[in-house]
Image (cartoon, rainbow, N blue to C red; front, top):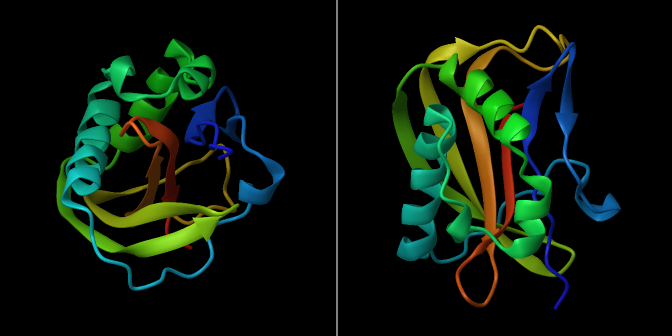
Length: 150
């Protein structure tokens, strides 16, 4: 099974970049389907929001492929973007989507404050974000996306 590379949104110098994604995953995820929530993935997903906000991720939770794309600079940039929103006010499972045959769990994340990304004015300033996450067979994160809800 082909696994995703890490996909994150981050402020980079004067722009926001998407990191190392296969062509099929470059657009936002298709509409969610009503799949059964996996509590283990939900716990992992919630922890990633806090880890990135703090700028301190546990690399052992990621696949080797994801780790090759998850640079310290990228972690810092994602941390700076997510920290603009303050604390997480709400976090909830919102279904799964299929991306290249992989089930990607989707979570609605609401921050205390709207997050603006001045480097990319076409993105909305919003407190409502979407986290998408997939794991491999061993439970390691193979796909991760933080994006403002459009």
